[in-house]
Figure 1 (tube, rainbow, N blue to C red):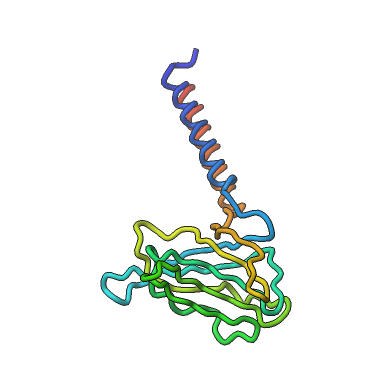
Figure 2: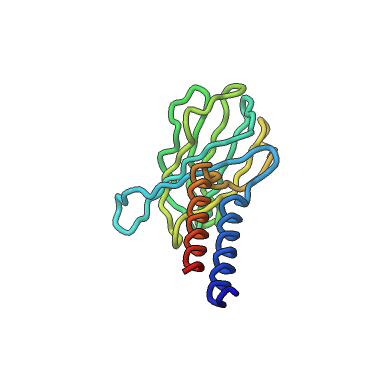
Length: 187
């Protein structure tokens, strides 16, 4: 017969394993025409009291044509001082960072417009900003627009999916935990 405390450990371990699996494998993603993935970097603060960060964006599944583009929106209550939109001086992209309008309660936005059909992505699109919120910045809404500035697609940015190496490490840790629990049960 299995002691009661080991049975509870097994249930707790199984519940923890299921939660970890759901978090890593079942991350919500924007589905449809494509995705906008982002990574985040906490930058050194140049001005005392400002919390400087930078988003790096990668589009996947969008086929931009000349004069089509995207706008990524920055909530005016959480973001200010959008700066350094990149890439700069690209022959295939026109980049622009527009500041928030506090009086009109309008968000700031990063805008990129394709200058040619099928432009290449010269690395991630990037923008630095001052974060006004608590914790770390999260996903943002975005629009893809056509040459008449009509919205073709709207979505929300997502964090990159965990790599297969990360999933293998988590799986190995789960197996190690299970083995340890079994060895404790035998002794």
